[in-house]
Length: 453
Image 1: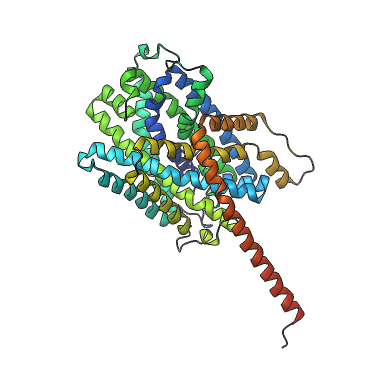
Image 2 (image 1 turned 135 degrees about the horizontal axis):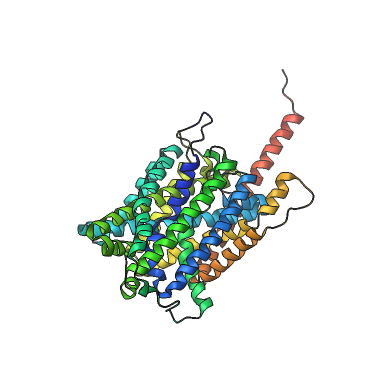
C-alpha cells in the first residue's frame, strides 16, 4: 500500500528487504564451506551474528538520528565529509553489482540441477543474465512493485529453510560434533578464515537504511526492521548450520555443492530435496531483487549531493533511478561474461567476486560503526560531542577483523577499485565548481546590468 505522501515501504516490506538481501546464495552454500572447521563454525556463526546485530544497532541509531537516503554513504558523508562519503558510495556501489553475478550464478546452478538440458555454458550464461535483467525490469516498475516482490519471495522461502533449521533438529546425529576444530589450523587462523565466509551471508544488514526516502515513519520503521531482519537471519544461519552439520556426514558435506538439499534429502527423501531447490530459487530471486533496489538508490543519493554524475540522479516516469540500475546491471553483465568466456575456472572467479563484494561492503561498515557520535553532534548542534558507545566499538572491531580475514588478494583488488574512483571524484568536483562559477558570474552580470522595463 502507498500512503498519500508516496511512501510505500512499511515494517513488513523493510524487514523483507533486509532478510531477502541477507538470506541468499551465501547462506545456502555456507555449510559446505564451513564444514572443515566443525563445531568452531557454529561458534563463529553466533559470534558473527552478535557482531552483525551490533552493526545493525549502529545503523538503527544513525537512521533514528537522520533517516537519509543512501544508507552507509549518507551517514559517512554526514560524519566525515564529501570525499569519505564519495569513497564509501563508490565502494558500496561496487559491492552491490559484484554481488549480483554470485547470486545469479547460484540461481542458474539450481535450474541446471532441476533441468539437466541446461547443463552447458551458453544456457547457463543465458539463465544467469536472464534472471539479472528480469529483476531489473521488475524494479524499473517502481519501488512499490519491488517491495511487494521482496515480501512474497522472502516469506515464501523462509518456510522450507525454517523447516530444515527447526524440524531438522530432531534428525541430528550427535556423533558428527565430536571434533571442535578438525581443520588442524591454529584457533585464531581458523576464526579469521571463517570470518569472510560467514560475513558474506550477513551482507545486507543495512538494507533498510538505503531507500529511506520511500519508508513510512522512517525513524521508527528502519531501526525496528533492521534489528528484526538481522535476528531472523542469524537464527536461521545458526540453526541451519547445526542441522546440516548434524545430518550430512562430514566427508560428504565438505564436497557438497547443495548442502541444504542433501540434508533435506536425507531427512525427507526426494520431495524434501525438491522443496529446498525451489526455496533456493526463491532465495536467489529475492536477494537479487533487494540488491537491485539498492544499486539504483546509492548512486542516486551521491549524485544528488554532487558527488556522482548527474545522470544517476534522474528518475524515470515511475519515480525510480533507472539509469543507476541499468548501468550497474551492465557492469554485472560484464562480470558474468568474463566468468563465462574467460580462461580462469569458475571457482577462482566465484571466490574473487565473493571476496570483492565482502571487502568493499565491510569498509563502509567500519566507517559507519563510529559515525554515530559525529552525526549526533551535527544534528543536536551541541558543543560536547556524544561518547562512542561500547556497541559501536564492538561493531568497529568486528568490521576490521572481517576485513583482515578477507585475505590479501580481495583486499588488494578492492583497494585498487576504490582508488580508481578518485579521478571520478576530481572530475565531478571540477564540473560542480565550474557550474558554480558560471552561476555566480551570471548573477553578478544581472546585478550589474539590471533589466530596464
